[in-house]
Image 1 (cartoon, rainbow, N blue to C red):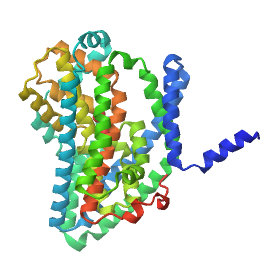
Image 2: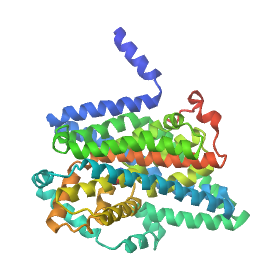
Image 3: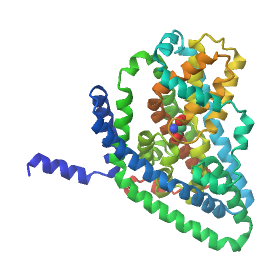
Image 4: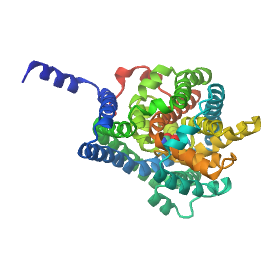
Length: 440
Ligand code: ASP
């Protein structure tokens, strides 16, 4: 074998696998850009297949993992007082991060005004076929907010499991786990059962991660090839606002949050969850990334008690990246269609974005669907609503990949902060990446 090939192979085998995922991601971006101009049905099909195999495998473990993690997490926390303390901290911290995200989104969108003059692109870009699909989903979201919350309570938990309805699964698991914690010693067989399930799902996650690099490569290439780079020209201002928002949230807000509320070093935390961030980018799904987020946090120093309680809830309820996008997107459309943005309307948008983001599932594109909840009260005509919504749809995947990274990162930031506050973090492990066990 030629020397340069030998070196390449040796490099490939010697590198840690998180680098493999990183290279997969970068290669996916380049291949996607190339494919955009050179449509090849066969290559697209193969990439789609590889990407779907990865997503399906990882989704396969999510439900058993979430239920078992919550049961073990809550029963290990044990007494009511501690549970209340962790729970209220979690809500306050997630709340702070999301409020900052919507405020930041509103501030940037009002200052940079990406929507002014954009109506022509919106009308030109909205394909009729997309508009038809969109009209249906706007209609679906018209139900009032109370109904959305009502649907969180599962009538039949098995039906929720079958449908993969994460929020109601979590509601059931929470109630069931609290009850188990209350009944005392008699809960041992059930808790042991879930402990075994949890351990097995973590093992399966380990195996699936061998497939992460090709999976992330294929998913990224497929996503990028669907929008190419010409998209940047027509909506550059809108994307610019989003990009600044995401960058500020990631590089300023989270690090400041960690500094104010804990002594967790941000670089170490970001290193610890790097694989989860990359998988979040590739899959655009916080639910699908959850097994990896839990594995990264637990194996790198955040206690099982905290990770298994805070992360599953965060993966469905804490969507600050989504909230930021929703605020910017709604203000963008309002500006494009000349809606007068009063202070009251802006506050209404921000509050609804917090609700809409936390009711959205951790799956690709969910954030855009729940945006209808906010848009419905904006005074846009039905045609404008449909055209605007369809316009946002055409390039949603791009922002979805980035906002999902934020959603996943902020879950870990909050978990690490609570773990720090409660002495549930092993700093020797977190601060020493050499000691990290490979999770993939
Ligand atoms: N894809 C996002 C997530 O899974 C949700 C969204 O904003 O669409 O976190």
